[in-house]
Length: 157
Image (cartoon, rainbow, N blue to C red; front, side, top):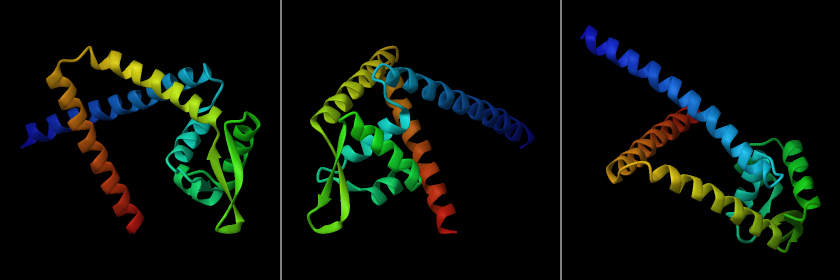
């Protein structure tokens, strides 16, 4: 029993270190990619949120979905509007609400960034065997599912 606990502790420490490094390296990598397009990670995340809503999204929904406070989201949208990547339009069903939509330029930029990111992942995946790729995806999906379940339980408590 003691050996199992020691092994589990060692594995936990290793996993914690790997996840920490992976998070840090991923953030730096994404920032470097986005710098080519003169866009920040929060702006990119916002564009992705907006793209998921074909008919536009309200500022409050966008703020909730991107987990950003309203003043921060307002600043992000202001910069994206000034670059012509998103536009504000009145909500036809509620004139008090403004919807945020991607412009054609915003859609094009998002497509270019997504293509670049997929090319990188393709290069990475080609270094793995088919079995390693499938195992990696299964393990990451399970880990993510466990984390999401834990978060839901925490929020419900």
